[in-house]
Image: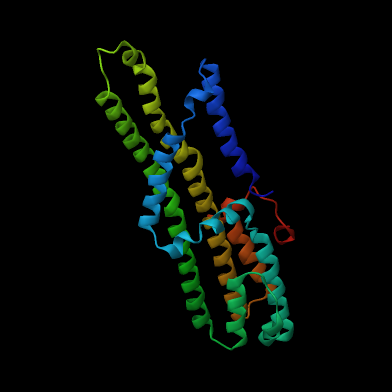
Length: 266
């Protein structure tokens, strides 16, 4: 499963906190408080709903599909572009009319090439598509960045609410109430812990993973743009391959340097 490291990281983080509680002679049950969870998560979710349009929020399930399964291998793109370059050299651009590709940007570019659009028109159209992808990705990432900011804030608000209620109901003439003071204060502070945990174990890691995937996807999309424009320019397939492999070896392509490489980089 490609998204397994993300899940493992979150599980290990929660496990480490539980282990810390046990090692420090605490009771895990003392840290389980459903009202505190509700006081943190419900206002956080409500603020996210208030701050983003439904068109953006409706894509949240798709974010997890991306997190758990999406990978980008630039060498596969290089192989495909070189294959297209060889085909165009032998059969012409009209040979792309029946070409089946999975990448939507590449498919769009091939349609424009078959329709006879000039190099500059194709270039501007692809750049507009890439800019649209960037904006959409940043909007998605901002959901989790905002949630990471809201959760600790609402955790602190819930703590203040709990402390105020506790102090307002405190009766120093009642020995039983004084005995419960420590437990009540501890329960109030749990919401602060929950806010920090949700922010740093769930929301920020999701945001960070989406940012990494964004960077990799944009690199691959840019590679598609550059490669297909080189085909339109009539460049030799070998020259195109060397050009794209060089992009992979420098700049943003360094993000892929530790990943397995296909025959394109051999």
